[in-house]
Length: 632
Image (cartoon, rainbow, N blue to C red; front, top):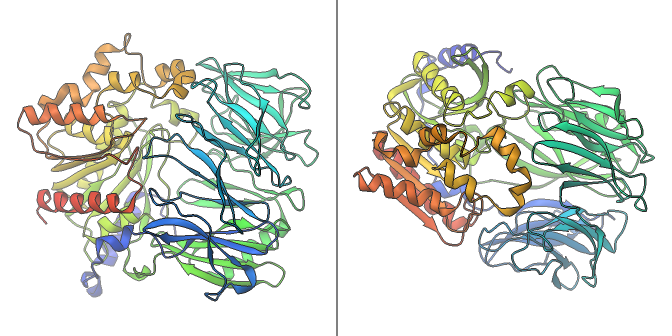
C-alpha cells in the first residue's frame, strides 16, 4: 500500500523494526554486482516477428545480437550484429525485418550519430557521418522499410533540419528546413512532417500544415509557461491529441483541431499530475492508455483489448510493475518487462493470442530481490508550506533510527525522481545507508505552479526544500544528524555544492558528480543548440547582468570560503553541458584553502560515466569516501 504521508511511512517502518527479526544481518553484495552490464538485456522484436534482438557484452561492451524467434529459449542461432569496442551501445530497435538502428557518440561528447546494421551480413553504416554534428532519429517510419527521418544540425549548429535518409544507400534528402526558430518537429502516423514547435526564447508557437506541400503557419502562441504539446493524432491524421496546460495548472490530454486552434474534447486530466503519455495501437488504430505518476506510475486505459492483455500479465506476474518494451507489427508478440523497486526484474516474450509467457532473462541475476530495500513514497512540508513528495529507502535489517543518510537530489533540475529500481540507491542501502530522494520545487510532472515556484531559485528556495527534508528526517529520528552526506549529479551536483556552501554544518560529506559550480560560467558555456532557449533560461535561472548579485551569492565556486565539508568531485572531460571547468574551478578554490577534495576525471566520458570500468572506479571511490566520513 502506498503511504499517504511521510509520518505514516516512518511509523510503519518503526513498527516493523521493533519486531525481533528486523535486525537480522543482510547479505552485503559486491559493488560490481550492482553496476556491471547484464548478461542479456534490451530485448526487441523484429516487426515481422521472425527475430528477437537483444544486447549482451562483447569485449566488455554491450553489443547487439539476434536470434530466430523459433530458437528462443535455447542457445542456438544467436548471431552477433555489431562490434562496438569503445563504448556501450545505449539502446537499439529494429528498422524493418532486416536492420537495427542505434545511436552512438564519441567519448561522451553527445554528438550522436545514427547508425544502422544489417542483421544478416553484419554490415554497419553511419547514416550521419558528419563531424561535430548532433543527430537524432525524428521518425523511424515503421511503414517504410527503406527510409527514416533524421534531424541534425550540420547546416547550423544552433538548429536542426530534418532529412529523409535511405537506409540502404545513406542518401539524405532535405525534408524540412528549419527557418531558424523551430525547436522541435511533429510527424503524423504516416510520417509526414505536419507540425513544428517554435520559440523566440520566451514565447512558444505551434506551427501546422495540412500536408507537406503547404507552408507551415503558426496556429497557437503561448508564453513558455503554457504549453500545447502534440502527443498523437486521430486515426485519420486530421485531429491532433495534445498535452495542454493552457489556462490551467496541470497538463491534460485533449483533442485539438488545428483549424480552430482550440482544445476540444477532454480525454483525461488529473488534479495533481501532468499527463504527457498517449499510447496508440498502430495495428488497430485506436488509443490505448495514458499514465498517471504522482507517487507511483499507474496506467489509465482507453482500450479494452489492451487493458485485458495488461491485466492478464499482472495476474501472471504478481508483485511486479509491467511495461511493454517492444511489439511485432501485428501486436501479437510483446516484450514485457516485470520489475519493482527491489529488482530490475525479468524480461519475457508474451504471445497475446495464446496468453503464453516465455522467460527471456533476469536482468541482474547476481542479486536476490529479497535482500534489497523497499523504496517508500514520502511527503513533507517545506518552510513556506509547499508540499514536497519524495522517496525514502531504508536499509534492510536495521532499525530506522539514527541512521547514516545519503541525501540524493536529482538532476535536471526540471526533471523528477520516480519510484522504481535504482542500482545506485540499492547499493547505498545495502551498505547500511538510508537514501533520501526528494522532488523539490521545479520537479516536473506536478503542475505549473509547482514548476514555476523554482524560477530563479537555484541555491535559494530549491535548496531550502532539500534542507527542510533533511531536517524533517532528523526530527523524525531517522537520520543521525552527525552522519548525513549529500550526493547528486548535474543539477544534483550543484545542489550538493550549494548545500555545503549554504548549510555547511548539515553535511559530514559531499559528492558532486558533473555538477555546476558557477552560475556565470555555466550559462556562458551551454551548447549552441541551447541558444534558442537563452531568453527562457534567463527567466527560469536568471540573467547574469540583472541578477549578478544573486548569481555571485549562489555560485559555490565563488563562495568556497564557506565550505568545510570533505568533498569528492567526479567529472567527464568531454561533458558538453557541464564542462570540466565547472569542476576544475571548484576543486582549485577549495584546495587553495586546504579543504579536502578528491577529484576523479575521465577523459573518455561526458555528462556521466557510461563505460563500465569507469563506473566501477567511481562507485568504489565513493564507497570508501562515504565510509570514511560517515564513520561507519
